[in-house]
Length: 145
Image 1 (cartoon, rainbow, N blue to C red):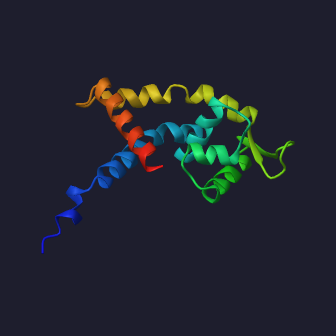
Image 2 (cartoon, one colour):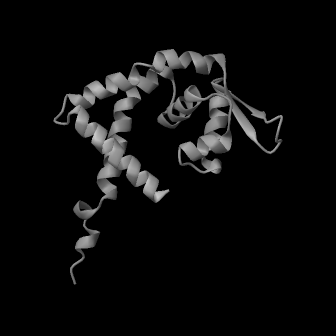
């Protein structure tokens, strides 16, 4: 019996996984300058959009479990990028708030997407193809969540 369905070349998951890892690798030099990891960068981007939000909202937006995000937030708090505070409305909720240091990183990080896009556009993919790819991946994510 042939098992073509098990060949790596026939998998959707592998190119998505490999592309994700390679894109994150391209981010790394920029993030190293800021002293943060890619997951920390994602949390910061969520907070730069809307500060003072519950841990559960961050986890949902990043498609992470709270037991995954909690250690990440603890490290970010020890780096003085965020504070975690109990909600005054609902004690069960923990609200994540940017510190001044976290807010200041926004200015330092604002050129990262443009720099990364410049690297991606040096290849054989144009802006419209990247937009279509992002939309297709967003649709896939929506379908799977």
